[in-house]
Image 1 (cartoon, rainbow, N blue to C red):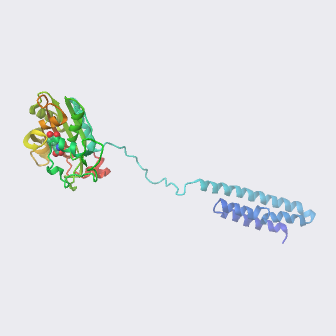
Image 2: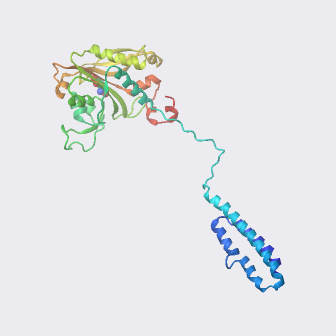
Image 3: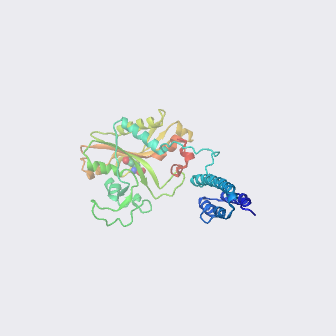
Amino acid sequence: MSLLNEIEPLKQAALADLQAAADLAALEQAKGQWLGANGKFTALLKQMGGLPKEERPLAGKAINAAKVELETALAARRGELELRAALPKDPTDFTLPGRRRIPGKLHPLTQVTDDIVRSFRKIGFVVADGPEIEDEYHCFDALNTPADHPARDSQDTFFVAGSENRGGATPQSPLLLRTHTSSVQIRVMAKQPPPVRIIVPGRVYRRDNADATHNPTFNQVEGLYVDRKVTVGDLKGTVEFVFKDLMGPDTKIRFRPHYFSYTEPSFEIDFSSPLVKKMGKDWLEIAGCGMVHPQVFETVGYDPEVWTGWAFGFGIERIAMIRYGITDIRLFYENETRFLRQF
Ligand code: DAH
């Protein structure tokens, strides 16, 4: 077969090879095989020397044309493969529905806490804070709670293992996760002289099994008011103002005698409103309160002959459940967005 007849089939084979290269490395290899120094197409050029003189121009022209064609094909294929290499491995499917970003919002418990704080601010209360890892002294002893009180039982409270003999802090007493925000009463009074007008929203811990109305962690708001000649009437008026502000003008409250070791007299507060009626009840127990016990004042160095005061504490989840008609407390902690989105 003459050289001229070899050009076309070789070119076709080379074109097929270049086109078949699946990636850039394969393409470079194919290029070497055909157009490299020892390539099969290059070999054609070398054979030109053996042709009779008169055949050379024609053959040269044909080979060069084929070479240009191969180089064009090579560049085109390289462009395609470079583009493919630059694309992401998993190509985007533009027909899929978009991923919407849902704007975040405050957790319902945060919203209720903010509302409670706002109500108390209207009548001059400020927010105070204290540690969630508390000691027995602030949580119990200083609140006139005796060592044999059931709340101090390891069945009811999370004690911090190995904290019994810790050094440093005075008074030294074992650490625990605070069972109520009342401990902050002590911390604030020990630090500042009267008068005091604070509320303390915060997380508390108890050894409870979670069910529809209990959870081992929940939130409370503590209130403390200390001044001269403070009365139960001030307490009742304040609580009534705040609950009406929070739960609507039809809200009623009533006090029932109760016992807390850090107040005397002590009361439980029940409240009633159209929201409570909706739950099929007349009254719901909502808070504990009372006049600060003189022993508590003695402990923090306030003169009980001069200073009087009241305190209260209530659960924030309880308020939120009544307000929104929620029947299972655990919903607050599951962070299921279908629940949270509703508030
Ligand atoms: N600490 C109480 C509790 O966790 C609530 C409470 C009752 C707080 C009476 C008070 C109070 O300040 O005076 O159940």
